[in-house]
Length: 294
Image (cartoon, rainbow, N blue to C red; front, side, top):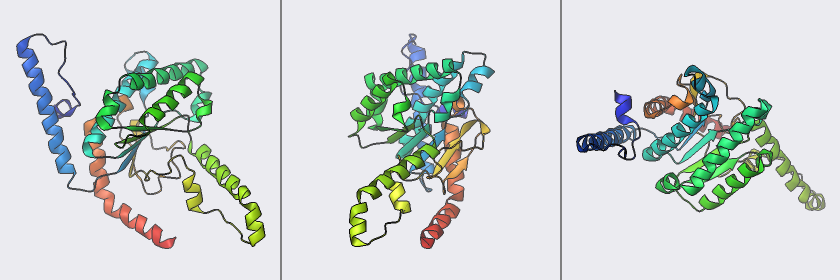
């Protein structure tokens, strides 16, 4: 019952024609919004995360368990993603990062990969054409990964979406696709090495030896400019990071709810933040000790 009361309901269902049903639906929507705001107000008395990262696992299993087409699970998952963005915005979370497509996913059946690329293109174009969600949260959208590996229509759509939201100052939404952490680290190392080669002549002339530092690598990560995730959530109960944000999650609170990604809802997000608040003193102590050792 509580789950239905606090689920996201941005507007009254336009298909309801009976006046009494319309009023009841409007009252229920208002009640949902009121309860969510009350819960968020209570949560805000504790430390709130600035950055939450998601491994959106379980779309295919969701479709399989319900005997629906495999691609339908990803479509329901997209709806869960939009709802989660709005919930996070209401809670004051500034940064959201999702693992949308791993480089390793290209090893899947070509038909499935093609279907996923078409779905990505469709959903990115939807965001370009219907900007209600983007405008509501003043969202800046990034795509982290090797975009050259994407099909041209998806790559072009992603670049257009990034360009069209680049000046937005609200929630920062980063979509990792096609991505893995190993590739990100190698890319950063290559860029630092290229910088070092550019300065090689000056280094030789001045007799100065230039070491690569953690800060040098950090500047060239896709995530440069974003704080590290406070919480990393992988749905479906899996405990693997699957090569996701390995550089950035040293002090992240890792959580593995049993819910499949399309089932992820406001109540799961609230529980995740409560769990984070419970261990926050320990996380902060670990971070401070690490800083002293540097």
